[in-house]
Length: 133
Image (cartoon, rainbow, N blue to C red; front, side, top):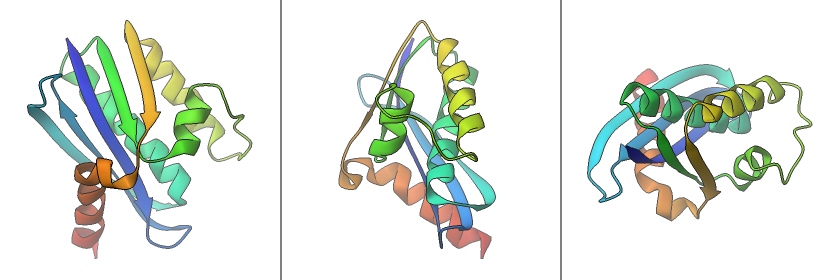
């Protein structure tokens, strides 16, 4: 089963209170799951990895063997695809965890899109941060 996973992460302040969000849907566009997670104090980029990891965990729990990950962070997409090196110490273990999680799927892709095309995942992040206040 293939799932499309829209993921996002964000912090209010950089670093600041952070959260992750994921919206999982079928290839036909039917939403099958939404998830959020508070991440404590983190930078925006660390929160973006949190969103990726959250989405991958939920996809695995739902039985997906193929995933198409869509986010609005060009940095994260290019790091995971190997186009950019991971230099920041706090992101190295998250990058490794993401690659390990992706290796558990028979096929995967990750790409970045403009924020407007990732609005549902972005809204989940903001809802989680608002609720945590």
